[in-house]
Length: 326
Image (cartoon, rainbow, N blue to C red; front, side, top):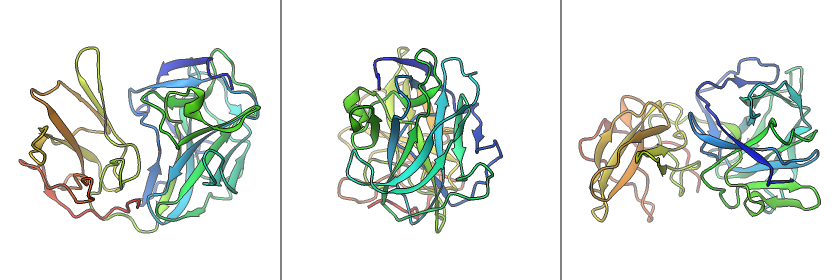
């Protein structure tokens, strides 16, 4: 893989379609959770990695948030123009964890996936006739690997190809099966972010009420991240709550050094990103999910104890019921 050859473009998931093989609209169940390492969301920048060669693969190492079944995989496929024709690639496979960076045994595979440019391609069936649904049992906290394999060399100037986010490559979560090298950590090969390769897990029991956003500790996913724009604005991004009932998010802030001094700042962000001017004094921030009636967890401290509800709370609080990774 020639990592030095790559192209960057601004990607927007808000306008992107979700498409199963054959472009049939998916059926989304209340207990489904999208499992991802990447932070790519509406308006975020990503890098198109066009240095792959035929037969090479890229993979995300993901963690199941519950006992349930993997019912779909998602791969973002993008060219510099966003208008390239459909592409038939080699395969998308799900493996057991194995020993990083090498995946373990093959659990299931989609042969010859048809990729649509500028779309978060979603696949729920193993065959082109859409008769064999994906159904891979997983347990709470189980690590599994979703791998995408190229059939042809991407165009070295425009793609389309796989995409990674641009806010850092997480160790132990991204790999490449590179020609002449075998499986290697993507971070060691210079990839500057996480692959936009995801899975959808249908949990056996849906979470009841508000849950928790990922926090890098016990709730799986990409935790709250903060960037500073050239205009001096703070940009916050995070992954979805583990509860399907949560449809909005709140931001609380407090004074550094006076922890648990947090109070409400924004009661509805409208999505998993928000931008605002920095506050005076040194602050810490918490992201709290809400279903519009109650709010969920403020996260846990280093001892695993739930943080207390903030002052001027946006809603009354519901006990956390989401399945959490150990």
